[in-house]
Length: 270
Image (cartoon, rainbow, N blue to C red; front, top):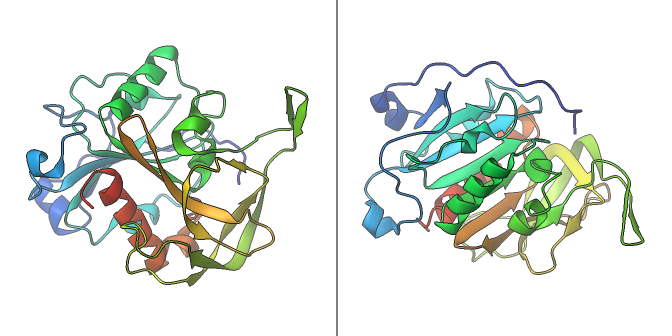
């Protein structure tokens, strides 16, 4: 895991809708996520299963290959993504009055949320907006006590002692070749994906809620065993996938499939 970095360059102007659905179904947004008519939490049939589901992909606080990352979301005409880079903290949640995204995909790191931003994110989850947490977003909001409860794990950015229990700083290792094993091949997120090899960064010494539904595991000694799972929080479906450090991981067709199916599942389309 890299050290926290300053906010990333501003995103490019929005791409025309026709290009979005024909190619990436994604656009770079320079302003906060906002769109007409809230549709959060509506069942697929009610929201209109024919329309592409809307997802906002939130980055910030951590370096990553900016040109290559959007390719993870290519080839999915049913998913329209807006990419948003947080410059300060949780400004994506400043105003949710016109929110109409079906799912959030987090790829941010070490962000600080104001009380109002925390409240707005919780409101979205209570409405059923899906949440996908990718790679370094394991530590998206490390200072917020509710964050581990939302997605099912806690990553320690430093040594801590709580209630007489010491927790060593969580670890990571770059450029590891390892095998990912599918723990539940019948789940909509993993359906059609077999065990696969990947070149990626591994994380270790993070705590996982024993109540999560494990989807992905590994025997790699530099990693925790459980590296992908689902859970629910309020009315929201939540999926965490530890994979996705750089373009070498982005190139994995299995990783791309998992991300797309995680977005669909959390949005209620699977």
